[in-house]
Length: 220
Image (cartoon, rainbow, N blue to C red; front, top):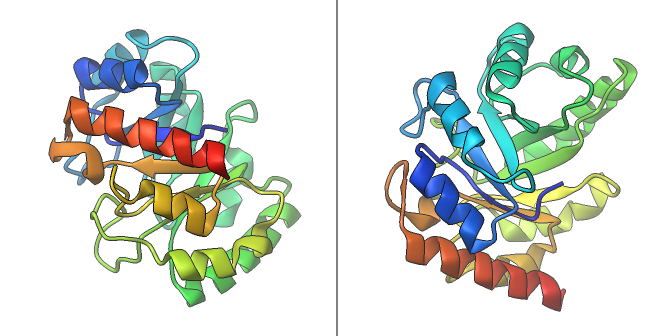
């Protein structure tokens, strides 16, 4: 699983600068209502421009298993991120060879429901390969710039022992080191914190974020 992901990439230049900065993964958002939406055609161009060692993650929000599978195959994605309200039974219907990241917004009630969700997935034959925790929001599916509740996430860290935890939500070059020290995640995910506008990255911020995150991971 990736350690540092630059999400909401919408063009080849930003994808290349993320790779050059040392990011392990980039995220391509296929949610049509997102300000960072990309079509499968554009996503395929972005994937083709990246080296093999950069993980290409497709971000999906309430797509069907059939739609996700089609886009994975068309674009050449390495990983699926479910960022909506997808039911547990979709997990076992997705391509077996492609890892799945299950995203959730942080709140006490969400953590409790995630335990039930994971148990149901297990009963249905497949659990997600990683858990991504984003900032709490009732109106948007990520990319809000709001900061996740690090204290609550750290308190529930042991609940998902053995499952890689990816921290998102309001991360920036200035706070990512503190976030990693507080939560001790396996990976971090940023979109808004390295942008000059939605879907357009700022090269200096991407490099600062990756550098700070790598140094923080080395310390913990």
